[in-house]
Image (cartoon, rainbow, N blue to C red; front, side):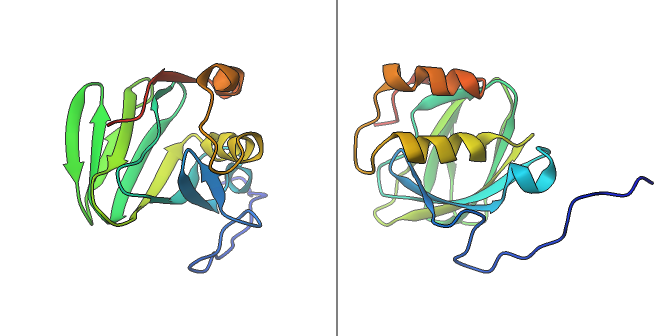
Length: 159
């Protein structure tokens, strides 16, 4: 078996692999395992989503995405299929699927997500640097950034 150049590490509760949590489309994301840590194999991030919010409808052309709901209740839509998931539930969206989610509760919800292969975390870092906190994202202006990571905006967030 070949030797790895990757190193073991621990991330404590409330900590992440970036100096501060990231703010992406109104959510707070803490990168727990970065694509840089895994040579791009995968990334893991914890998300805190405010009530009645979530990302726009989108497609990851290269990545499968998996969520574990830790707190709250979420409505996921994957290729038109609606999935309601509460604490302890797992949801999977395969690469190429049109998907999104929304926290349908009245308190912040929390998820732990994994993308395979990695890269979404690097996209989130760029979004955090590009879109001022609290500003409404401009889909036209963000299209080149989505394209850079082989992602595609497919519609607005759920209402």
